[in-house]
Image 1 (cartoon, rainbow, N blue to C red):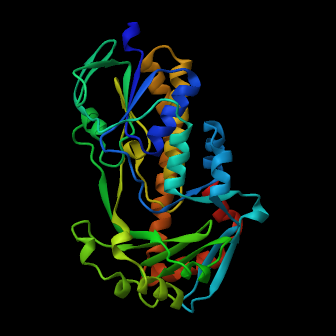
Image 2: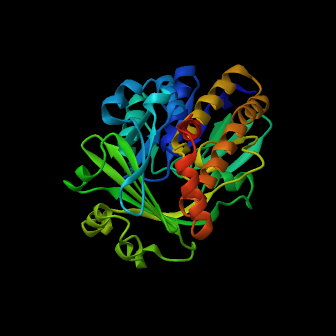
Image 3: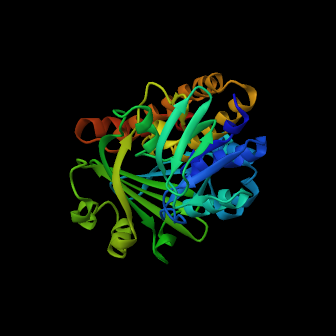
Length: 367
């Protein structure tokens, strides 16, 4: 391979893209990181970090930065229709460490770890692949040559489309709304546990954060429905007096909302392109593995590029190392979401199962 094509182009400065850039720096790999938007402002919601995610932050070198900005989660409280906790899942007894953090804080910590600046307001115009790399026309330059292009550009990835024009994100039929809970209403909920309500096809989850909390609402709605037309107070009303109080005081303009999608691909790589994070395997958020999976992808990809001089071999090695666990997390997240949003007989069965299954069953989901 020619020396002028050793540089890597990372497309997308979200969590997976920043993690990939950090690992490139740690391994001495030359790269450019581009972001089509201006300086990014991550959406206002929280990220749950299971043990694998916390270990990944240690590998990136930012765990010590994140720890004081995050909350330790001791378990999950599942509330009944009587608005009382009917099941408490204990993480501590099972030696399971889980933390929650504001997405903006995680993003900022990743960004601060980089020594090379992100090239904002920069996108790909066209790509021309060859045997020894790819020539890319950027919107801010005439041309540049790279060893490969890493698609860390999320759910609607342009790089995924270059790999396979028909590989699009699939709607799941599930909608969500999320925002930070206004003060002082977050004091109505546990500061040590995630509190969840599963009722008649509707889900509400409250995630503790330092000095606050994040609420997530979810239900089945077709992707064709404009969520701006939905009255969430009516849709999610009567789940509990505390949820009603939050809904009555939420600024709808401050909410992040959307329709959940999944990405399922036969392959995440086709030289000279490779995908990480949501671009490769967007999943339901039920297990909290989405951000963690993207970081683990970045670590595995850069490790493979260092181990294998041949880029084709490196990309295949990366995919093989990550595909099984990512697909398992994707499937588990989908099954949990279906249980959370079940109705009728299925809801009754799921509620009974939640009461009877041991803590160890739920703990395995987060490991």
